[in-house]
Image: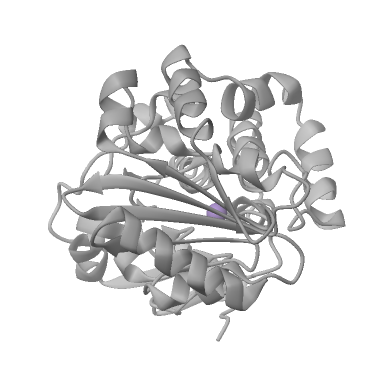
Length: 317
Ligand SMILES: [Mn+2]
């Protein structure tokens, strides 16, 4: 299903008015990949916009160009490029604007990618979508230090700072190439990966203290309630990464984070180890992702959802 970089480059060369899109509730890879393209295409002299239907989380406001990200303002664009989205619904409210573009490209690294663009480029072996964007921009000779910083931050986010099993030799080789451009790697790692505000620290401690374990500690679940967010002054974006604390427990084979995002509406993140397939559970709820990291949404009562997750988890561990 893959189109070549040549065809993607041809489409970019042939368009002046380009809109970039990333997924709703953006993470470091979605934002870093999109903003790297944004800066590179701007440097090319293109009229380029960067769109997302959610506000940029505080910790990512340091990313160059993040202040330019907006909700789509123009009815149609000549070319639309979506990054880090496995399916078109991940664009949230930006979906319509993406579909309105005269030509559409989708670049992604999820195994559950649905090839929703006219031109599609997917590489499920890439730790981050930014690995693909790096290869594309390198080929186009559009790399600069700021682009390198954005791509490095994106790779750090999605590879768990080079610790997740999705990290390959190529991930490290790209990181080396980015470091050769003069970036301050440890500074970026601190800012996008390690640092957290005191509100998130309090949220993490409240929720982790109530973690539940099943099947001799092989299944772990944490639940973020509306009250947790209210008491700590946080929101669902602050749940990012907390699930890793469960996955770090030696007995845990599969971990779930269930976050209340609306009235009887929950966002579920799943992490697993080795051959334990997170997507097998996510797909049951209409979600997707990678073997060891997936996500989905569910409606209903938290306890019913947790029961269902534990039941499904038992079938995959
Ligand atoms: Mn990603």
